[in-house]
Amino acid sequence: MTTIAFSLNGRAVQAEVEAGTRLIDLLRESFDCTEVKEGCGEGECGACTVLLDGRPVTSCVLFAWQAHGRTVVTVAGLPKQELSRIQEAMVGQGAVQCGFCTPGFVLSIKALLDSNPTPTRGEILAAVSGNLCRCTGYERIARAVEQLTRQGGSPCAP
Ligand code: FES
Ligand code: FES
Image (cartoon, rainbow, N blue to C red; front, side, top):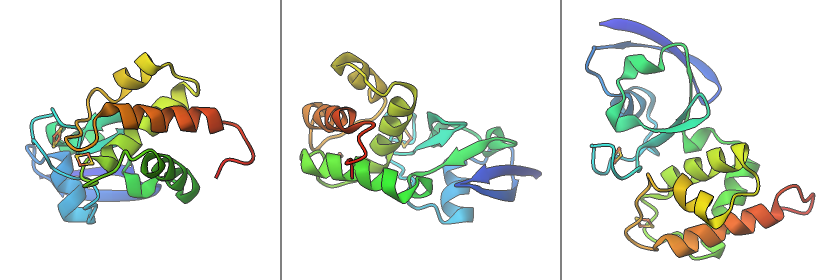
């Protein structure tokens, strides 16, 4: 067992982990971060996406010890206004159905817009290429991001 320390959704936390403990298991089982979903368990679907130092990663293929000294953000750790804004755009464009993929998409979209507030359609599709949605298809998700892009910077944005 190793003790690791990291920032989780803005809080300093510590945990005892085995060398082979996956980050997704640590988050779900030790910190009740059940918003981090497990789909494929192989790094392919993006349901388990979290932000590690601001970049989207698939937590099912990372070891927990890899979070040591770093910053982890789940969808529950986003500022409420920012989360609402992304969710409302996705719902408004019909980009949420079963919702299983949504936390991962929200984090990939947030990371995209943080680094590139005016992405092209191609950049949007590239940014969410690691997230699979079996319900809505990517057209609606891309439209939601384009809606957010149009709202970007406006003091009237929700
Ligand atoms: S559960 Fe991690 S990528 Fe699918
Ligand atoms: S909304 Fe069901 S998988 Fe995306």
